[in-house]
Length: 253
Image 1 (spheres, rainbow, N blue to C red):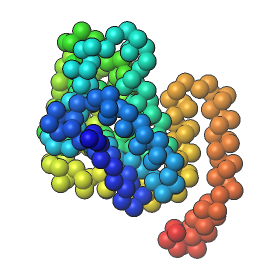
Image 2 (image 1 turned 180 degrees about the horizontal axis):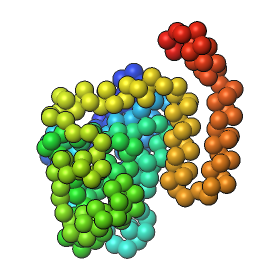
Image 3 (image 1 turned 90 degrees about the vertical axis):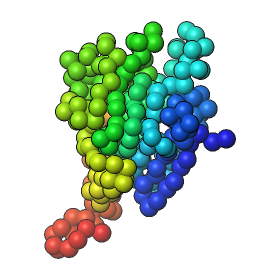
Image 4 (image 1 turned 45 degrees about the vertical axis):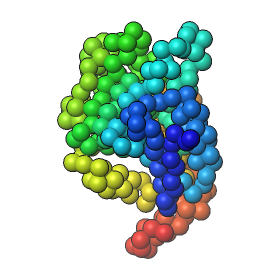
């Protein structure tokens, strides 16, 4: 039985975590299915954005504790969930976590791996791993402080605190909060609209440059990479089409 559901509409792929009976707890089977789905979607030239969301009343309540209980040191070193979240982070197109309900533990780490997070007012975020004797070791201790700053990250990571959507917006963990699930779908479409209206290859290479900076490339390498990316874009047919339209005061193709 599949643990996820994938739909591609236009240029947007939506991947839904589909274990609502356990609040979309992230099992090993789900990890494997997500890897396969992300690999396939990343190879598609018609997919220009990715949305991750959850079925039912949660985004993802975290890792499947029944499985996590039996994992040992070798499993931690394998980085089961961490490798998946890195794949989400490095997805070549912009990504949005559409969050309704709980995004806790691994669920919060999954949301953190996306480029943007849009939530409903029912959403709850947190990294309660320390209350279970472990840590947010699948990227949370790196991505959370990068997003909200060390002070807020320490509060959430050391105390295992769960915060509501309003607090998540205040500290910068989410980009937007909306009323309900219907408003969430509309907000995701509106958020992606200007991205999808931009030149797809320019957006893709911009994300690639941002990821290189995020992953610690030195300034010399970053400057060289930016130059290589810009050189490719300067020769791209869409650059000429869009600039010709601008000069002619026509709408971009």
